[in-house]
Structures are given as C-alpha cells and as structure tokens.
Length: 82
Image 1 (cartoon, rainbow, N blue to C red):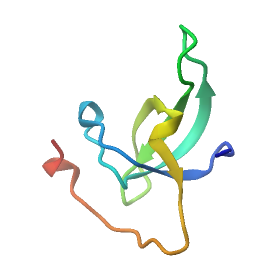
Image 2: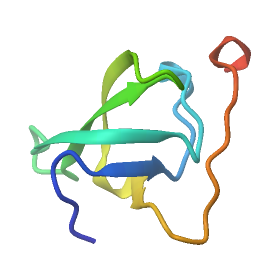
Image 3: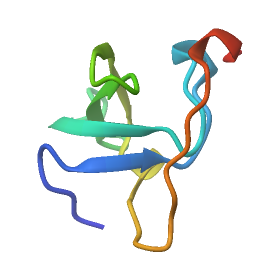
Image 4: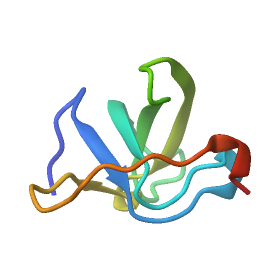
C-alpha cells in the first residue's frame, strides 16, 4: 500500500522497545531505505491523547496500515505499556 507523508497510520504489531502496541496511531513523517537493501522503513511521530509529541520512531513499512472507516479510536495508558 502507498502512504502519504503526514498521514495517520496504525501499527499492526507491538514494538515493546518503544512501548507501542498494535492499534496505536502515529503520523508518518518520512520514509527511509534500509542500509543493507532490506525492507524500507517509516519514520513515525507518536502523540499522546492531548496532541503532545511522545516519540519519533522508525519501523518497517510492513508494520503500518491505513486507518479504516469501520475502526473506532480508543485510549490506553502509556504507563501500563510493557
């Protein structure tokens, strides 16, 4: 799937090293090639519920998916993330 810069996307897997979980929403801010020719990456900015920036992370392109009209947003505490 093709994504546009500054599009909101959802993670489709957990990233415990960043305390992020599948379903978390982030803004796609850049694409980066893999340094050894592997899968390209997405640079994502993650915000809290108040719109404050929490982190900028890089994940594989295959780890993000487009938001869909049949999905409902939810809230979880980052303090409980493992």
